[in-house]
Length: 311
Image (cartoon, rainbow, N blue to C red):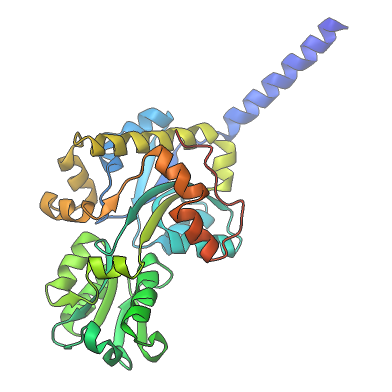
């Protein structure tokens, strides 16, 4: 009898093992942003993720977090790195099968901002003049959140503006050409282009004083998370190792610069406004800190966030 039970258990174990191997990903597809530098881009450049996860890791750049969600729902992306929090919130409120597993970074208005053209003469002092005018905003993104909160601070009614949905690069180009009087955008190169013909509606300090803060996260499809928990854990762990390397001043800035497609000097300027949290800080943010408060403020469904993959 014992021999029969042993044989049955052996067959069952082999079945489970084979099923696990069959479900294991042969490639991991990761979404990320250009013009948005982060320490783990060095590991991307040096193919450290492929080594850590044990399979090829394919990185694809996207223009905004909404497009990342769409790609995840289409089955084209497994992990979105540094997805904006608002695109994630909107997705899970619509019952998208994705989960939040890490905080990529916290940042102020240095990396996401609204810029008015010098030609328009519009500043925070007369911001109500934006009403009736064309403004470029990447809808559904953290830049839209910044736009909405900024309008509350300067006393302008967004409902009275002609809002044109544009990605940051398009918005910056429209501001330069004079097609819009204000562009809300993110990304070092796009902001640099916009500020060549305009000024930030709110300075970084003014925005911080007004309570505006951005959070980018790491999201994963539930299917990939369920079938490849070890890969998710390895991805998160390697990302935090990169963050620790950066905090210690040991990052390869040239490698990061190459993958973000930014000049090192411009990249440093953007990075100065980012805070890459330690695992302990991340867990606190997810459970009771900035991230938790942000999610509760937008009535985000519970159960969409997990800290089990943190180092």
